[in-house]
Image (cartoon, rainbow, N blue to C red; front, side, top):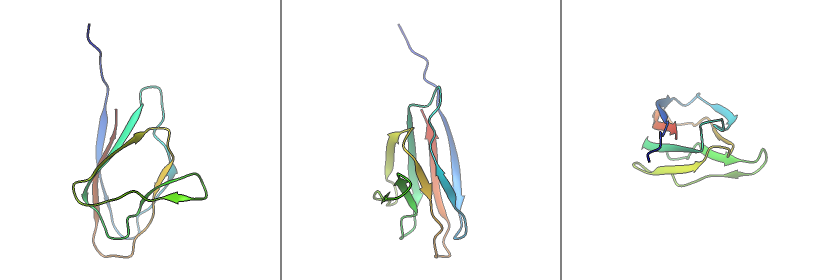
Length: 91
């Protein structure tokens, strides 16, 4: 017996003005989401939120963060001139 596993992934480059409002990836085929920090920035602009409080996970180069797809998260703008680079996706 074998199972078909669907996944999708993408690359995101954020400059200092880029934001991504609160969202989740929950859907019929999304159970787990991930983000791989290739070039994070010092103020850690990725965060989980409940609409009020923020939880900011560690974000260092090479970190691979896996979380349930239903968890709301966002990207806040940053003030550095460096671009933030990640690979993100759903399984």
